[in-house]
Image (cartoon, rainbow over all chains, first blue to last red; front, side, top):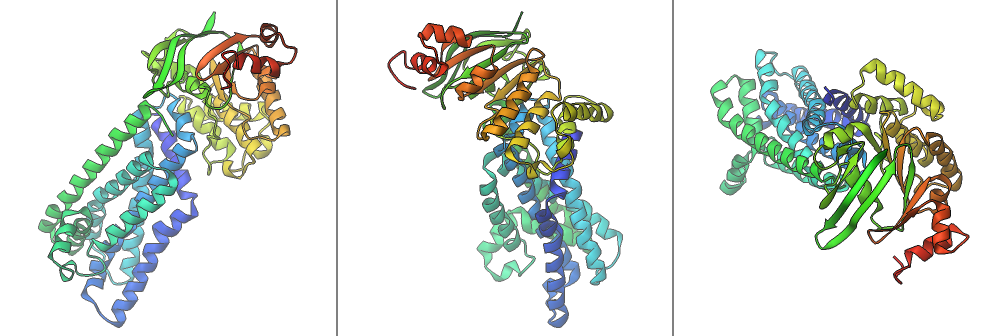
Length: 244
Length: 244
């Protein structure tokens, strides 16, 4: 299948980018250590490791939209994608080629976050594995967001838009502060968007509150499917009439 | 026998006609240059012939395959070296070549063999383990052409292959391109008169989307009544009284 060599190339491009390692692994790790240190000195229930680690895992995944968007936008702007569009690769080869290497990156990112959390006091239970599964739709959501951005705008603009998405996912996730404290409007917006739902679903998985997983997870799955479908449709349309 | 048979090929972008109805035949093994100033429509022709942009009307057959009704078959027999350097920046020279070989259906071993062959024939040995982004402009262009050749295309499109290169790098690429003459049908676009004069079997002069004249350099000189090709080009390009 021709998608695999392309996926392999994309994985190499990603893991050879030192900025990706810093942002994907380093930044969430530092935040986890920092907030855990704050919690140990001045306990805040929100920063308890069982609540904090799912939040940081989702925050870390938001950087995936930056990496995937940059990769695709750079391929477009450098005409590398134009070269490939002139090859026998099909639309599904491209889409799989971009998505496949990002999924393991996202899973590794979450694994690193939870393994570090074990050292910070998170219980080692099967629920962590469940949380990893629950985070997959969130990964797909951010990969799809990156695909959409990379298809529509250039690499410089991707940086700006991705930073807005990363900030939104941080502020509206309920990881850093209690959303109820800001006001009902803010809470309603947060509940309507996927970020707080992603964190809530992962928290429910970690705490073993299985019934609470699906209501939140369905929101995330809905957004992930919608964003992915829109990005694929636009990508295919661009491919039919390739312009940089 | 014709390798490229173009019939009434036209491209309009809204109200602007980028390529006026074009009829042209390029023989197998011929080196044909499309010469014109910036914005003459040269790249649009290549984009249509390589199935990157759908023509507004008309058609072209490449070794009997229609770009309109059978683009998939066309893509199997062509390759393109785009105007911008289209390489995977964090892959080595060898990895770039093997990637393209695999995308065109070669298995891992066959891709390695073909990469070795192309590296040897295009003199890329000294940089084969270097990442593409670390190469100079000249080496990147050489790699870009090597990536177009590794699929062993029957028809090769070179879009402004020496654009922005210094005179030495340009001459090196010319000698490289000259070696391919006769083995593969080449359609090259350029706005360098000396490039078209030095390399081509025949030259087509494009002005404002219209193919004004086609012939060998001596035929075009004779038609314009000039000794120098530059004078002949200016004369033909301004035949309607307007400099494009």
